[in-house]
Length: 217
Image (cartoon, rainbow, N blue to C red):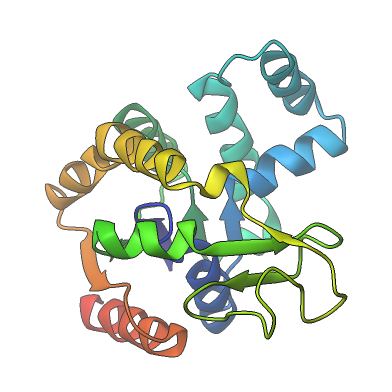
């Protein structure tokens, strides 16, 4: 299957993308991973992307699209893939369509993870990260530490990242509504969108997604 995963920040896209890709036996292709891989391997695209980032500028769509194209042409993606974070806007969606058409491929579904804004803000703004190890993550409501402000694992101080502040989360949501959300209507016109509720236990959300994708076939 060839799937595009969309949803607001805090909807659990990264978690669900990993689970769905493993279950469906297709690679999980995220823009974050693409950028990190290309920059660390010092590919021509990576060097180009880094030059924009170092200058404090956004990486142009054509660079992101070229990275995605290169990844989708790898042998492990022959049987399908799950795109996470790409396309990020309608122009990227149009470019993806052109790319797939050139390769005589098409998308099977666009999975839209839907979550109420209040829930998204609560999820992200409640996160606390250990200063000693960023892999140690807690949540003031869902997974609180035994002692407030102290990491259960190593005793390090827990803090809220700047990216996780409520003000920043609301700005990120505004960007999502303005730039990314329009691709849902774009794909609805093609009959590709499958919407599921991204609230509740992680296993339940995964189950809903797999069931919805199955029904859509």
